[in-house]
Amino acid sequence: MKQSTRQLLLGSLLLGGLAGLVGCNDAQPPSSYPSASPTAGPGSPAPSAPAPSPTASAPAPTDPSLFVISAEGIGPAKLGITLGELKQALPNATFEVQSPFIVDFDAIAVSQNGKPLFYVLYLAGESFGDDDVVQGVLTDNPSYRTDRGVGPGTAIAQAEQIYGDATLSYNTQNESREYVRFAQHPATNLSFGTGNGNSETAGIYPSPIAEYNETQQFREDATIQSVLVICLNEACTPASP
Image (cartoon, rainbow, N blue to C red; front, side, top):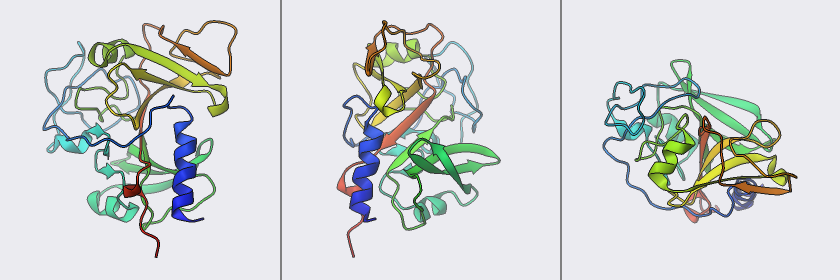
């Protein structure tokens, strides 16, 4: 399959749950950023700084930019680079295929010291080698955060104080993956995963359930579970030979 075709398929599938959040904005990684309450899976130590969260903080890494989520990517997993370049940036990490990963997608799981850092997504049933370009990255590691300190494990109520009013939604035609977007969303190509309409949702939805469901009400204990960053522009498609 040609790379341009693969790009369009990847983008259309990923964007199915983003409720119209499309693009690939520029963002400058900060020198430091606040930590938040981690309730998701294990990860590398998060940078410590004055935090919006009233709970735990963790020792700062040598280079905080390695843990920043932005429109450009997640840490060193920059959109538009090749898998081979990512391996060069993380020489001590392990890269392992996970197939299946989620419906429609396989992934390259990138881990360090036995702990998952993030996942490079690609279409299920295809191969992904060192020359292939990173177009989608997902993390559920609470060490990775935006420049405002929001990431996996952050309470939605806390993120709402930072980014404005929250709207949660899911579509039964997109595997019922639930996302939250904010009035001042940090980047149009970034989505915060919060649950699944087929099991437990973060949002509180009216009945009966429709194909597309949206609400501004959510459980008090609801958190962001994962962060997905994608790229659809030409930077993510290498020139044809």
